[in-house]
Amino acid sequence: MANKDMTSDLLANIDNIDKSSFADDDSRLDALRKAEALVRRLEKPWESTVRVVWTQNVIMSAIRIAADLSLLQRLSKMPQTHAQLAEKVNCEAALLLRILRQLTVGGVIEQLGDEDAWIETEWARALADPDGLINGINFFYDIEIHGLAVLPGYLRQ
Image (cartoon, rainbow, N blue to C red; front, side):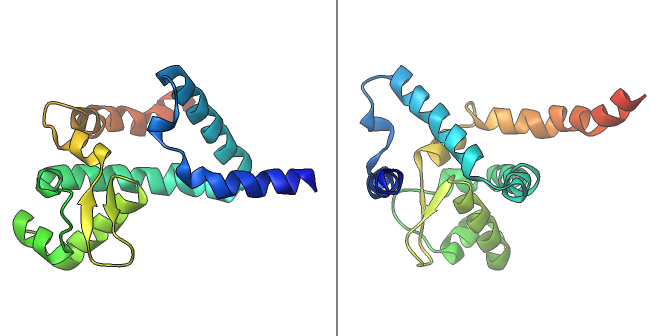
């Protein structure tokens, strides 16, 4: 019973934890490692496989597409509809809606409730800087992905 009470208490408070909840970066990183370990303990094998094989790759593709469209620079803290954003980036609205949904799943942007209202996150702002984090995504697509694609075949030889 004590274990179930502890779990209930944790779940009741977990939404209140964010980056500002920690005294220093070492404490935050320790909590992050523990949270990642918790995810691995909670996930079933098929969930881990979906996350690694499908979700992460689709999110990375959505980030690259968003960067190519200059979508990240057009997001703000002011909510915008997918149609407004589609017009700003010259993209078909239904296609952009799918991209926005993938970016939301990945935590890159935020959808306000169930509304057609999309806002930037801290991560989206960081990715919008053409000299910043987006270069890691670009490097992956332009260079690294090709090597990773042939690596298993090379190692089989």
